[in-house]
Amino acid sequence: MTRDQQLAEGREAFRRHAWGDAHARLVAADHDTPLGPHDLETLAGAAHLLGKDEESAQLQGRAHQAFLAAGDAAGAARCAFRIGFGLFFTGDIAQGTGWLARARRVLDEAGLDCVERGYLLLPEGVGFVMSGAVEPALAKFAEAAAIGARFKDLDLVTWARLGEGRARLRGGETARGVSLLDEAMVAVTAGEISAPLVGPLYCAVIDACYEIFDLRRAQEWTAAFGAWCAAEPDLVPYRGECLVRRAEVLQLHGEWTEASLQAEQAGEQLSHPRVTATTGMAFYRVGELHRLRGEFAQAEAAYRRASEAGRQPEPGLALLRLAKGERAAALAAIRRLTDESRGRNRTLVLTACVEIALVAGDVAVADAAAQELSTIAARLDTPYLDGEAAQATGAVRLAQGKPREALALLRRAEQVWRDFGAPYECARVRVFVALACRALGDDDAAEQEFGAARRAFEQLGAVCDLSRLDALQQPVAPAAASSAGGLSPRELEVLAQIASGSTNKAIAVTLKISEKTVARHVSNIFLKLGLSSRAGATAYAWQHQLIPSSQRPTT
Image 1: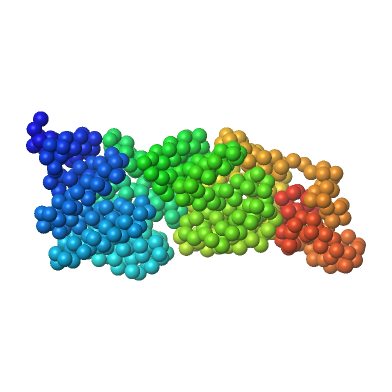
Image 2 (image 1 turned 90 degrees about the horizontal axis):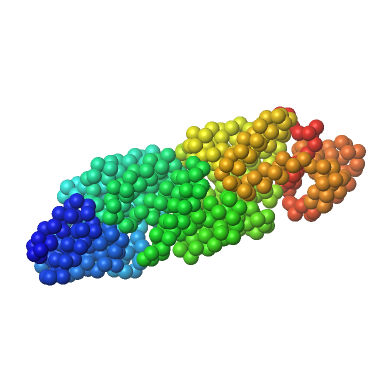
C-alpha cells in the first residue's frame, strides 16, 4: 500500500471512529515520510482516544512546530492550547500554563483574530470558577461563546455553555445552571461535537450534577455516557470514569456486589499509565462498599489507596472509626472535617457529622450540622439533598425527645428514598421511624419498621447496620440497665428524668430528694458518660433504651 493510500485510509478510519485502524494507518504513513501538521493533529486525536496520552502530546508538539514552520499561527496556537489544557486538567499546572502562554504569544505576535482566542478563554474561566469568582468566570465564558458563534465553531460554543452552567451553579443559580448543562449536552447526544471532546464533556456535566446532588440527572447522563462508551469499541480513556459513576448509581440502587466490582475495575484501569484524581474516586467508592459490609481491613486498604491518589478518604474513614466502636476518634475527625471541608464534600461531611455526633451523644454538634445541611438543601433545591436534610433533622429531633416532630421529617425522607429506589437509605430511615414510633408508645408499628429494615439490611449485606439494629432491639434487663455507663440505679432514674425534659427542681420533686442532690447526680452522670450537656444525656438515654415506657412522650 502506498503512503497516499495509507493516508487516505487513515483519515477515513478516523471519520468512522475506527481509532485503532486510523492510528495504525497514519503511523505507517508517518514512518515513510513525516506527516503534515493537519495529519499529525488527526493522529494525535486517535492516540488520545486509544489512551496513548504521552504519544498524543508528543504528536501535538510536532504539529505545533510544523504549523510554526509553515507560518500558520492559528494552527500552532491550537496545538499549544490542546497540550496546555490537557496538562492543566491532569494537575501539571506549571507546564500547562506555559503552553497556554505560548499559544497566546503566537497569536499576539501574528495579530490574528481567530477562533483559537476563544478556546484560550476557557481555562481562564475554569480558574475563576474553581476560585469562586463567579462574575469574572461568566464574563470569560460569554466572550468565548460569542467568538465560537462568530466563527461557527460548535465545539467552542458547547464548552463555553457548559462553563457558564457550572459558574451559575457555583453562584447559586441552580435552575439556570442546570438548563445550560442540558443545552450543552444536546450537541453531544446529537453527534455534533468532535469525537475527542465528547468524553470530557460527559465527565464535566456528570460531575456538575453530583456537585449539586442532582442524582436523577446524573443517572441519566451516566447511562448516556455508558452507551457512548459501548458504541466506541476502540475507546480506552473515559471507560474508567464511566465505571466510577456507574458504581455510584449501582450502590444507590442497592446493587452492592456489582457496584464494588465496577469500582475496583475502575480503580485498576485508572491507575495506568498514571494515577489521577478519578483514581482516588474509584478507590474511595471501593472503601465505602467494604465499610458498609463490615469488611474493615479491606475498607482501610481502599481508603489508603484513595488517599495516595489524592482523594481525601473522608468522611468514610471517620464513619469507619465509628463502625469499629472508636467514637472519640470518629467525633474528633468529624469535628476537624466540619472546620476544613468545602464544596460538595462539605455536604457529605455534614451528613456524617450528624450520624457520628448522635452516636457519641453530642446532640448540639449534630443539631448544628443538620441545620447547615437544611440550609444547603433549601438553596440547591434537589430531592436527594432534601431527603438527607429531612432525615438528619428528624434524627436530631428524636434525640432531643421530640418523636412526633421527628416522625414527620423521617416520613418525608423515606418517601424521597422510595422515589429514588434507594433501599439502603430507605432501611436506615425506617430504623429512625421505628425509634420514633416506640418513643410514642406504638411498639407494634416500631417492630414492623424494625423488621422491614432488617430484611433490607440482610439482603444488602449491611453488616454494621444489622449489628446496630440488634443492639436497638435487644431488651434491656434491669441488671444490664443498672450497669449502663457505670451509672447507679438512682443516676439512671435521674437520667430518665433528664431525657423527659425535667428540670433539676422538677426531678427533685418527683424523686423526693433535694435539688442539691439532683445536681450532684447530674454532675456524676455527665462525668461517667463523658458528656457536657443535658441534650447529650437525653440522646444517650434514648440510644441505650434507658427510658421506661411510662416516661415516653405521647405528644
